[in-house]
Length: 139
Image 1: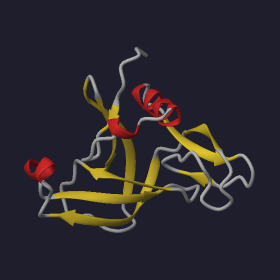
Image 2: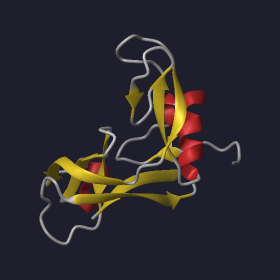
Image 3: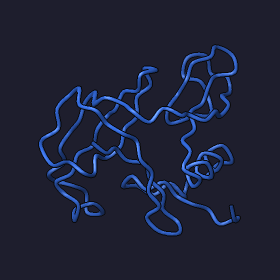
Image 4: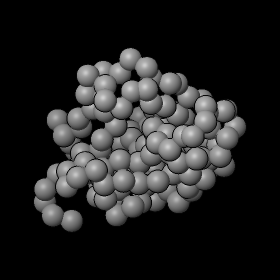
């Protein structure tokens, strides 16, 4: 990947808080891979990854997360969106739970009917433009 920085597009800009740890996450995302982090001390897993463990404050390391199928754990329908996402409203922000128990928040982008807790979700990746990457849920 080139030295040009990418940003994760979830309705907010992340280029103002770029770190080498986060850059590694974005480079993997650019290749269609999702990274989780694992605490080097207590083994707690995080998705999306975090640099330091919430439980013991030790450093975490990246590891590829290969699960793609999840179930809808919770969701919210956003009718009154912030200005930057107003053209997409109403939209659904959902928490999907993977078989491993890890959960991930993302937009559901292809709903044809109202969402239902417990419905099947599939993780997908999208390159919006040269500088914007995202992951999303498909039903």
